[in-house]
Amino acid sequence: MPDARSLGAVLCEELTSDELDILREDPVEAIPLIDEHVSIKLVEYEPGEGCSVEGFYHETSRSIVVQRAKSARRTRFTAIHEFGHDRARHNREVAGYLASLKTTTRTTEERIADAFAAAVLIPDAALDDVLGGKAPQAHHLVELFHCDDVSGSREACCVRIAQRMRGAGYVVLCEGGNLRFCATVGTSYPIARGASQAGVGLLRRAIEHGSATDPNARLQFPDGRFTAELAGHAVTDDIYTFAILTDSTSPPWGGWIPPRRTEGEAPETFCTDCDEVTEAWKRCEIDGRHRVCSSCGWCECRAPKIKVAEQVCDVCTSPKRVDLFEPGSTICKDCT
Image 1 (cartoon, rainbow, N blue to C red):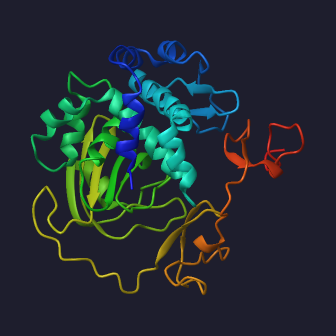
Image 2 (spheres, rainbow, N blue to C red):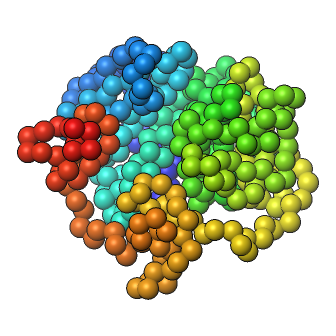
Image 3 (cartoon, rainbow, N blue to C red):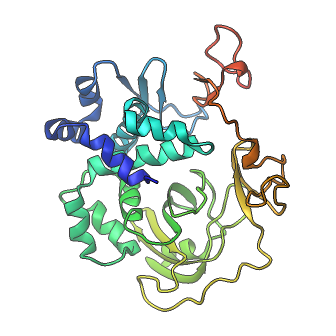
């Protein structure tokens, strides 16, 4: 089964070296030159709008809107990420793989778009030079971001470093006490952007002292629940904090962690109806391998076997079933 990194590489291989160069330098100018059917608009952030979306891709019109960030690198990453959605949906191999998935199609596509943007902005050679054949530690994220051959944002650095990790875990970027970006490794559940990490001691100590390690670190989901305990390493660079958390019994920064005991911890599942990670104590009566969402009773057995027609809402920019729109409307019923 292909992973996000390999599928992101497939999208890169479609482009020539010249196209990759101009995309790396100025994606807003390059994207319409690479594909005349794709348009892109750069907009300024207006305080008070209440919108945390930095960019979105509208499939029907093949249009991209990107909110200009304080950092040019961050703006480039967002633009190329959104372009990755278009490439993914128009590449036969990647689109075919996404269509074959029964669940979590949106999450998988996000990871592919991240991988595509990171691969464009951060060459393998730069990543190899920084790591030097070693497993990633948090300070490697800082070194990679400041490397002369790298034009990728801090978010892109997180994605690239995550690709070199083994096992399961997280590579995260925080600004103050809030999560700014989360790259998942292995089977870890994603944590939404903006989730408060005020209760995470590893990050708090790194902010206070410049760096920190914790054999029992946990990250916090938006609803207040925490991940399982993981070995963690974090460093602060300017106003940002990078952290790596892994389930490895031999973390790259040293020491040995006994295998985790999971008895008594709530099993979790990603529920496509709730669109979030939920506790799932009960197993499905039809297929005992499946966990049942404790909130709504959904499990994988209830996933549609036939792909449902979707339309992207112009307001929330989320793909919704076509029956959730009034005839001729481009705004879903939830937003009207």
